[in-house]
Image (cartoon, rainbow, N blue to C red):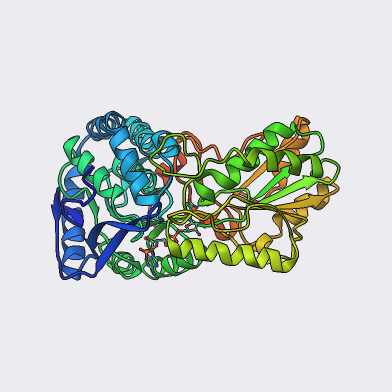
Length: 483
Ligand code: NDP
């Protein structure tokens, strides 16, 4: 498979290169091998990206929603037809097992393009009668949008930001994480093959400073970031200084609460999905698993048994269901937290170490008897480390679940439906689950409260964040004035 892209960037409808930019090695996390090299964008590349987006957006916004949507839906079909190849690329970029990428990455990107492609023709204003006068509203695009991605879902993030932006008549300039630069280039290539005019979806590579250059350019109207809270604070502040629109999809330390009447098998399944999918590198993970003390040991015993089902190995082997960390750096960060958990006196149920094989593999790790004051219960680890905490009553667990700066997700397992709704209603989180965990269909809004972010991706809600409303008062009679 050809992993070296034609060139580092995709600008104004074509691949472009500028070898003056710093070299970024693309490393396959399952082996540590360099599989491709790209260059960070130079100021010249950033300029080309912004000026082509600015030019192209004006024409794009004049097209009808049906025409725009048709192109996005065609791109969705092409992505589905090429799912295997794109999933392989995602696996090389991130190390996630093919078993996962075949169903979760390009496919969810295609879902976003199809969904927002369908919505494009429905974006209208309203008519507000005012007696014989009236007001009408027009839903307008914002202009040039910048998307900045994290490394855990490079294809999905490129589409989740691009699809609603383009549906609303904007242009998108996307900067992938330097750790996973390959997938977004394919998204750009496919969009152009599907008929997207040049300049509307540009991809520029680079580290934080390239993101910073884009965010600070006065021609950029909106910034959507998926990343950590510290980066979010910086990018939000930079955008605010020029009064730009933002969407911030940031980190979390989400609670997953298992009541004593829960179906244990399902609760264990939810905890596994909410901690070990993508080797735990998912922002919405339920990493604080509060289990009622009456069922704690039963829960832990079943969890330990089921974790034995993790198959670590070659991510391209479809039997593998647990891949490496995305990078050596991330592996070392997570190992540091595992050591911290041991030092703090949490009870290690399983895992707790690097696996003795090629690549950045960590064993799925469960700590029990975790208390709220431990670092592993407070900080986002972004790896396969589950913290199990005990609780006794509902009010207590709600207060403890909310005692965090984060507010991305929350889950409840119980057979008592009124309790399920009552508890979810009191949890401070944007994306919640009852008797499930980590489902993220494009039809549902996704995003956090508190430090986990502002704005929403996916669903009709995303339209609010990629468009603005102009209101026009129309007077039919004479204008009254004081003098
Ligand atoms: P970072 O916050 O380190 O980086 C996110 C992106 O921002 C990267 O592309 C990075 O570039 C870029 N960046 C860094 N500094 C700046 C800056 N000053 N101006 C503009 N751009 C900048 O996050 P990671 O990539 O390490 O991803 C992990 C984090 O993302 C986790 O904390 C996780 O919770 C969060 N996340 C949130 C999700 C959500 O939807 N809420 C989904 C997935 C992840 P580069 O890294 O190339 O330097």
